[in-house]
Image (cartoon, rainbow, N blue to C red; front, side):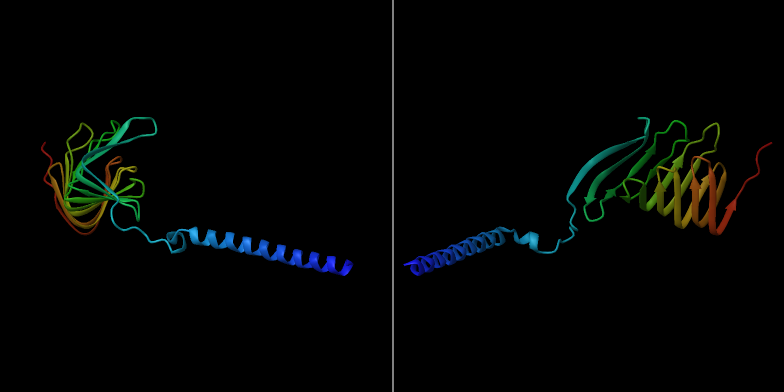
Length: 197
């Protein structure tokens, strides 16, 4: 009789363990089945724009709360892949009262690195009106890199600049609007009329 009870207990424990394993296996299988297929696949980088704004005007503020510059345009498109913005017909105006005002326009632009780099393409024009401290300034090129936080403009393309009555042509330049220091890198030639007496 004792052997019979031991046999029944052994069979009962064996069946209990088997049912527990089946229950755990079923739970695991349900969890695997409920996992979203997208979670198992490698992430695909999104290349299509995720939003756009027509006829926008964006104002960048300084850390003290003063307006520094604004960027306006016909169309702003956000690219989620690199968190950049494409702009059609960008217009950029500096608003910092401590620096000479500068206005830029182009056919199209690209804004990168949290608004710290603005690439301007096609029919780029930059204008700074005459001030008591500086002559009028005009720049024409097909490409310009604007670093608005540093108030610097750079290009590796041919540029034509008018500074007062002087006209400069060259390929490649670096212009700091704050310090009014201009560097031109190659094929530079210019016309400097004599100053009136």
